[in-house]
Image (cartoon, rainbow over all chains, first blue to last red; front, top):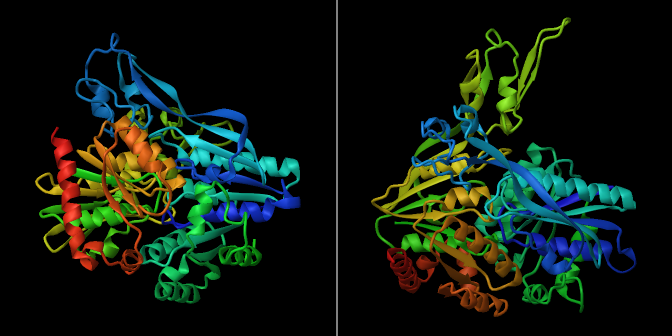
Length: 289
Length: 284
């Protein structure tokens, strides 16, 4: 079983569009159910808008703690305020749940035992069916922490499902950035497809996320999306790939049909025959992992 | 006044709006809080004056004082410390997983033997400088580092309240966004009128409402997509301050790292109007 992740560093370069296209290529037609899909952009998950999953199982994601003060027991000594490094307890002993990092330091120093740590409902996760195969996805609660843990959970469930059903592997839609959800989506993965766009920001951010992949010894391959919006910058990215030994596996042209497919709730591989589809098919064939 | 620019979905134009807003106003301080992937410097090309390392305090155990009682491991909410008590045939030992540590300080304060001191662990850098009369600050998270919020808080320590402070936030809705946007006087949410843009805008709106910050919307690439974003904003009584059309020339200027107001100076008055709207609503 193989697992690949689509990441980008910079947001909005086309991770989810490409993941959706891979889903259609790997699980379309007679191949339905050959792969498991996992949406690991848990704080702004969008893959479901292309795949319209039918939710079969739904679970709570309990993670992290938040301090709760019993006002009657509180002696207003101020030790909790002094202990908290996250500025979560005001001088009037109001606890701001958004600032609280759940460390529990306050509860340990309170002489009256007035602070308890309550486990948080930090989100939900789902096992669903799509027209291309099973999908594991999640929704992190608003302003919640622990997105890395939720990503790790989604990854684990997707891998288990793939093993159980004898699938070929898991295709993971990753998060933007280089922090905890991205690191969690890279752990134990066979390869990363990095999608960038021909802009200075796109190159800057892709090179940082490729470094992160290298740091965790994950091989990566690069795709330039909307390459024809600035051919000169695409040339710079190609030069960057040559100079740094990074494999460029394809370029996708800019086409308003991509937005149209999104509006219609389809992947770009469904319906018609377009140049964009040929671009993506070529990339799919050149995936090494 | 502190204005933050956030989005939910990535790549909708946060940095474009933040940078061009900053370039259209006087006495601005710019803070790039997208420490995982900072991009504003590409457009503003600041002269960096100072670089400081950012640290979080992590525990170090003095084995000569440690009695392996396990109190530190018991109080650590992040399971960053493991302690093995001594057995007949071997001495005790302790292990610290410093990448899991949030730097809360509970272990060192609560150790009955005073055996734990805190040592700094480097998580990235904060750079300060200027471009023209604009003050510039950004953070760069170290490669392989998972936790952005401590570095974001370090960037925000530089806030200069006598200036108009513009914060470029990271995408998403979780802790790095909250750390960036918290304590702003006003928040501008940038979206695009596509199903992805709208879906993530709704999440961003929920986040900003939890934080109780007044906000308005900028629609970027306003002519690519559908009408549902407008309908949503109307229904929720969310003001739409500015619509930026999709133009190849804007995209090309962006791709070269050239700010829109430099390529199209007339756009400046749109951003000044955006600021006045934000200011008016913040005053209410």
